Length: 153
Image (cartoon, rainbow, N blue to C red; front, side, top):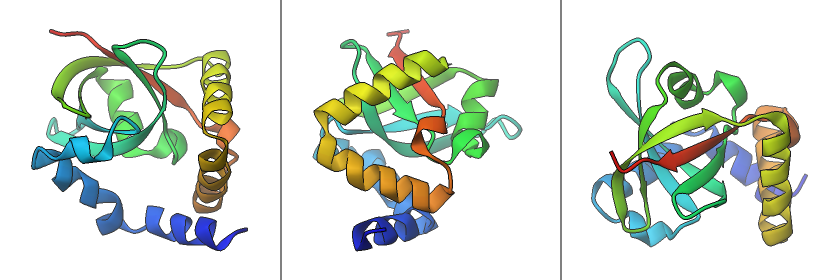
């Protein structure tokens, strides 16, 4: 395992580090991250409270669609929340809090999106794969993916 993957895995397990980009998005500076990241606003399945997470965009199958992976699998709180309530909001680039619907992708859809990511970002893939697999102990190919479609509602 590379030093980069070791550092990345530790960073993914450090709450303040993972949550820091949320404050940047909430300050209206999300455009600094470009289109490779997005902030997902979702609703707590028990609390009903607004929750936020910043995720890497794996694919953009259409202008109003984003594909993200749940790096911590089906146990990730944001993933569990979107399964309970698919209505979300997305902030990315210059878009702020755009209404969207979250849909869990089939295994085949996820495989296709992952292949597209690997083909378009081979160096990032090597680091990302090693980092996620070290942090979670799960092969990336087994992690669930979610399609986020902006609805404009």
